[in-house]
Length: 252
Image (cartoon, rainbow, N blue to C red):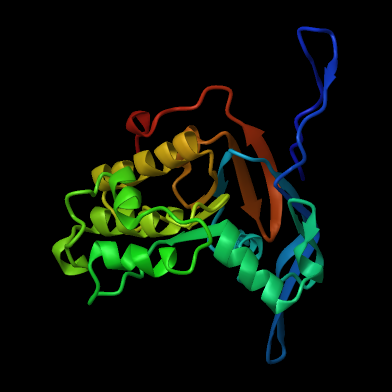
């Protein structure tokens, strides 16, 4: 199932052709074999993601959300089908091409913050900026997530929400085109989760970063441009929000 904006008529009467999708997922399946057991995590998934979209993926555990996110981010490869990013078929690429794609184009944020305890917030972010082609200064990245006053604090000196925002700063510091988030508020309370969602919304709006968020929390869908619902390895619904909510308006 794909969403593709149709052509529109400009004020001059010309037909405006929509831009090419950032991502095209075509007929993707993923099968895992564990001993004599075969699990089909994805079943012929079709999907397009466009530049600057904020997409929320909903579904129960085992519905295929994380598998799809891992394939989008180049952490896993499909069993069959194609993953096309900016016109390049990643499924036909080498490990070196996938590594370069992950390093340059994708940022990851997970439920567990994955910060190095012995490094400060600034140093955790610098781990990414040291290998990126056109990185932000770590201070700028941390200021973007409202942690400019926590540069030299260690993870143990930060709250859960602050640690997650450091993780977001680390992810955006290499200026990725895509930010993939797997349950980024899953370990946080209601108010702290909202602060993290506000940070993601700000990154989406100010930097134009395409963001995909996996969540069990259906309320978060209200802040998305598009909501994808998954069940048993397939996308069962692909809907657009006519009116997006701000993170502060969400309730759960």
